[in-house]
Image (cartoon, rainbow, N blue to C red; front, side, top):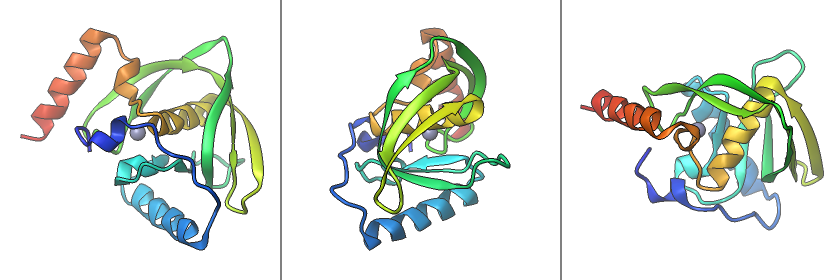
Length: 158
Ligand code: ZN
């Protein structure tokens, strides 16, 4: 939840994909689906390691997990889209991000993967990799909008 220091840490890479990490991934999928999310990063459940799960709910993309994900390139064009975050319940806002991004990572089999994502998938991946770098979607808002979002979040918790 917002306020947890782990959400502001740069998460560590995992040395290898173990069965323990695969179990963690299935727990993360459960947590994500229970909250009706489209992505979840390990720091959101208190672990400062580079593990994310993603399910953009489109017909072309099956749910997948990535280890040690990094955004290695971003397109020059941007898109605006509404985002929320399971760590900041009750708050959604429009975030401007590059409309395409290239992510390099290791997949569930331990193999290197490179994903050239566009549109919604690019947005989800950038949001989740941000979590691995201690960045929240609020950080992409203007100072005024960020203050309003934080006020809304505090109010929703009263
Ligand atoms: Zn989030």
